[in-house]
Each structure stands twice: as C-alpha cells, then as structure tokens.
Image (tube, rainbow, N blue to C red; front, top):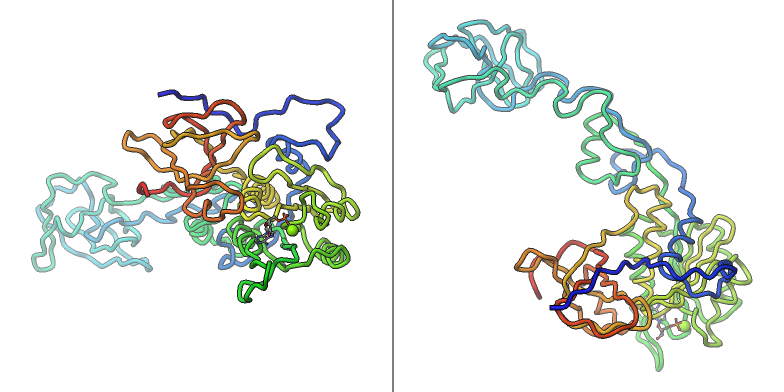
Length: 427
Ligand code: AMP
Ligand code: MG
C-alpha cells in the first residue's frame, strides 16, 4: 500500500518578501497562526476561591509548603507493631484511628489497633493488615510469615515533599490539580483571567432557533456552536447576539463589543458579496492583519486588532466557522489564558479511504480510533461540504490533507490534529 510522508499543516509558504504586511496576501495556516499569536498578550492573573477554580489556568507554580502526608500514616487497617519483634503474640495497648493522635508508645510485645490514614504511633515501624492477624483476648497473633520495617506505612512527604514543584504555572486545574491545591491549603488560588469574548453572527437570513424561518431564512446556528466552543476552550462569553447585514447596525454592535471584550468573534459577511460588510467595517474600525488563509474550509478569515481587542471574523458556513475557531482561535485563547498547552496534539494516522486533495490545505473531518494492528486509523465523517455541520459530528480529528497532487489511496498516512478523545469503536 502506498503511504505518504505525513505533511505538517504548518508548511511555510515560499516567503514573498515585501508582501508581509499586505493583509490581502493569502497566508499559510502556520503563518496566520504566528501572526495571531504575535498579537496575543497574556491576561493578568486574578484570585479566585478554590471552589470556582476548576478548569481555570494556574497563574503560578505551586510549591508544596508542607510535606504530604504530614505524619507517617497507616495505609491499611490493622496493627501497628515493631517489624522485627519476635514475640508470638502482642498485647493491644490502644486504638489509633484517623483524625486524632493518641498517646501510644509501641515497644516489643505490644501492638495498637490502627485504621487507614491514622498516624503511626511512636515506636512502631510497620502495620500488619487485620486479615493477617487473629484476636485472642486482649492480644493479637500475627499470621504473617515476615513483617518488613516500613510495611503499610506512608512516610512523611512521600506523596509531596515540602519545597517541591507540584504544579507548573499554565496547568489547567482539573480534578487532580484542584485536589492538590486543596490538600496544600491553597484557597484562594491565583489563576489567569479568562478572555472576555463577544460573538456576533451576521446575516439578514438568520432567525433564532426558536423562531420559524420565513421564506429564504435559516436559523442562526454559528452563534450557538461558537459559544459552545468558547466554553470548552475556557473563555468567558460576555455577549452573544445577531446583527443584520446593515453597515450602521453592525458598526454600532462592533464598537460596543470591542469596548467591552478581549476578543470579538463575528460570523458571516467576509466574502466578496456587496452585503459582506464585515470586511469594510474592520478596515474602518481596526487594524487588519490578514484576510485570507490557504486552507479549506475557511479561506476567508479576517484577523484584526483594535487597541487591545482581538477581532476574528469567520466565514458564515458552519463548518468553516468551527474549523477556523479550532485552528486559530482556540490556540489564541489558550495563549491569552497562559495555558502551557495551546495546541491540539498532531499524530500520523492511516486513512481508511481514498483522499482527493484540493487546491488548498484541507482539514477533513474524521473519526480516529486505534485500529486492529494498534495503529491510529482515520475514517471520514462523510461529505465534506463546508455547509454540512454533520461532518463535524463524531469527528475527533482534522485530517491535514496537503494540497494538489494525485488522489491518495486508502491506507495512506496523513497527519491529523486530534480535537477530541479517540473513538472507541469503528462506526
Ligand atoms: P456568509 O459568510 O455570510 O456569506 O455566509 C455563508 C453561508 O453561511 C450562507 O449560506 C449563510 O446563510 C450561512 N450562514 C451565515 N451565518 C450563519 C449562521 N450564523 N448560522 C448558520 N449559517 C450561517
Ligand atoms: Mg452573510
């Protein structure tokens, strides 16, 4: 079977000196991404209560201020003993349960009942699990061949040593991370501010999802898709609305949203029609950095700045809008949030079907799973029209198809950007 070397998405364009500041030049996706990231300034940090910190980005390295566990702790329910004690049975001299410190001293011939998580009493150097013991009156008999010093005891600092770096700045605070913060008593916690984002969908044809479209109308789906994508990326949506293809209305909306947002996203109105008003409005209100990207879907993609605010104008076709978000906006937002990882992983995959390259770098939607031979395998999600939102349903990857050339046979290897977890089963 023919395979083709995985081709990176971010192939550099043959540099054309002198045209670099020309916003009309069609950029390779990597150059577009660079231009965007060069304009990103990380947002300042803020202090939030730990209960509100899940999925935020940690602003500073977390250094353990104390050892964990702070005392030698039993890892089993059983008896605290001296490991090398040859006594045939031991007198039970006390009970040490979690949450207290009893005045117990373990010597030869004695043991203390102890529960998981309880501090090991002075003198003891092992815990014998209760299932290896037998009770006889006030005594315990150990039925374990050999007891080693340290057995079933978590020493001080074994999980976290005081002074060690527990989490790096830029970590996303998930379940484990928030648990570590809680365990070390970090509340409130310093996190990076989330980008405040406004979403403006444009088009005279758009009505709300709960409205019945009139003749020639469709429902606005991009606004909902983009808000969901923003939430997943960790941004704060401060406003989402819809505007008609009317220059004055769109100008007013843009001016207002730019003033209150770190990022403004528009959908629609960036093509070549005379009702495509976003392009001229951006030229009027902002500094435009580029307008077109050498990719499919999503060739018209305007990136502009107005003061500190970044403005991304996506095409109206639903797939183009979401793919543009994935490829450019998500890394930009992650970078603003100071996240350590801003990009999705990219992996070589074997494609289960023939692939016909287009004239631009194409990002075909696919479902990637682990094949029977253990290699990653990609299956298309069907027709790839930029209007067919269903092509993103079930997709966990964008296949990066290099432009031009012959049809790639089934079994070819391509690079894929993984946008979600691997699919468990072939569909
Ligand atoms: P435009 O980029 O404005 O030329 O729109 C391109 C295509 O996307 C047209 O078929 C529009 O009707 C459609 N479209 C534009 N905006 C949206 C939206 N918010 N939701 C769904 N489809 C849209
Ligand atoms: Mg339109």
